[in-house]
Amino acid sequence: MEGRVCRRFTALINLMSDEKAVCRELRTDSFALGDSTMHIWVDADACPKAIKEILFRAAERVCVSLTLVANKPLRTPQSQYIKTILVPAGFDVADNEIASELSKGDLVITADIPLAAEVIQKGGHALNPRGEFYTKDTIGERLSVRNFMDELRSNGVITGGPSSLSQSDRQTFANQLDSFLTKHVISR
Image 1 (tube, rainbow, N blue to C red):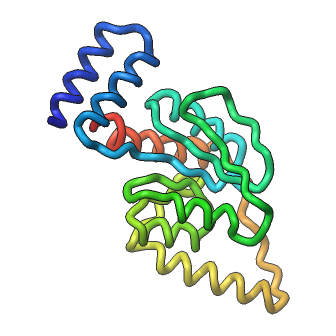
Image 2 (cartoon, one colour):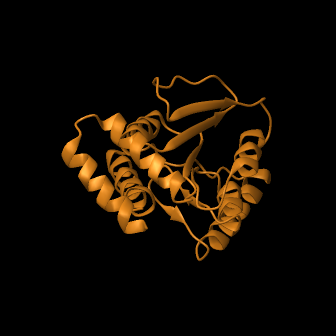
């Protein structure tokens, strides 16, 4: 059945110039085959604007649902694939919303290591805005370093923050996202 969707996709691309119609047809075939639809969640309060722009374009390009969760209103393009969830301000409120709505196989964009650990535990995928995937093999070490740095800061040690997002970081993120979407959405 999986091959049927790919053949249908190729035929639609060749026959149709309307990208939206191709997306609708693909989504219909996917639901008819009983596939669940992968969803992208964004921990949006601290997500850089450049990364959000990449995500907006990707959601439209591959017709995948993208939800930005934040404690302040966000500007997003008009799209049937893009929505926002406004949560109250507070410690980990956006993270808890994402964790409660997450389904197995979903992708979460976050720099928050405890949220990434929870995503991985629930069978999701976690990608940070610099293009690094958190995995079962790496998340334990990342949590340990994060907790150690947090302890240093609570004892008054100035540890500094992350460097600003570079063009190389943006490109790495875009490449990782594209590879992930090709494997988990487009090739279905």
